Image (cartoon, rainbow, N blue to C red; front, side, top):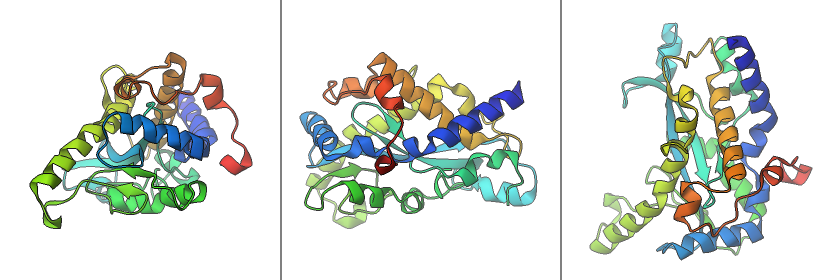
Length: 269
């Protein structure tokens, strides 16, 4: 049974990794305009925000071998872990920029996803963003003159296409503190997408966050996560509702399951 599950997860992840890494259908100008309007209607203090980005960790069982243990050990958390990058839209559909084939079956080979697409191990969120090519993909589909952007946390570098709260060493004032609080109120939705009770990826598919089962070197743990994200999105599309969409008043349409699973054209890949 374990081998059947492993092969299923690998097949699903490899087939749909591009859709989850960057689905250009949902960042075209018409879609982005509607997404920005949904965020603005919730009282966004900054213009142009259309989606939310953050890193999330997946705890692992202690790998075999000193090299593997060192590669996956996070001194900050005192755990073995790997990190992923999530981007959630105001309709609750989640992406994980950007997986590569090379990482999907890492659990089934000697260690010698997310970003080359998920970098293995406890990588910094800013590094994952750089390696994912996400901002380059947005540049490709967004007209230069638009103010559209993602909202991340203070771990990310500011840019034209990514805004974040101010840090205390960047000129802290009462106004800055109030702005940060408002941005935090919006940014919480990325945490819901991964962890909301009964709805988030980790809640629907508890096995992917059970470190005892995440055996790097024996199981394709990254493929498990990617498959869980895809299946969660499919459920969201079938239900036509989720906590994120509800928070934004369902002002950004959730695609139908047929629309979401439609084959991508070459220009959308």
